[in-house]
Image (cartoon, rainbow, N blue to C red; front, side, top):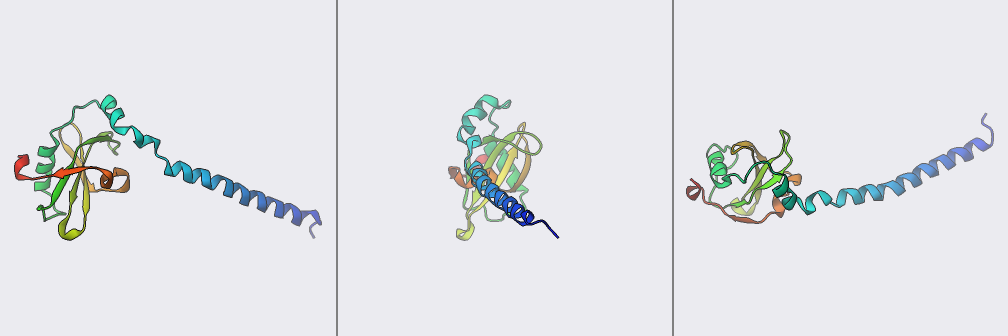
Length: 142
C-alpha cells in the first residue's frame, strides 16, 4: 500500500509537468515563427559571398534543356539569385516558376562556381513563393 501522501505527490508532479509544457510550448512556437535569419539575408549575402553573382540566366537555361520534370516552358519566370545554405555548402539559389494550366510550380536551382549543382522542386525553406519574378525566355538566355 502506498502512504496517503503519495497520490498527492503524483498529482503535484503531473500538474508541474503540464504547466511546464504549457509554459514552454508558446516560447518554442514563437521561436519557430520569428525568422531573424531571413530579415537581412540579401545584405549579409553580399558581404559573405565568396563568389560573384553567376550568369544565372544562361546556367538555368542550360540546365532546363536536360530537365525531365517539366515539359511546358511557355509560361516561365525566373527570380534573381540569392546566397543560401545548401547541403554541399553555400550556393546561389535561383527559383524558376512554371504556371502551366493555372497550377504554379517552383523549382530551385543551386549554383556554385558557375555550375548548377542541384535542381529540385522548391521546398518551404527555399522561399521561392515569396520571391519576385521576371519573365524568362529560354531562347533569349543563350
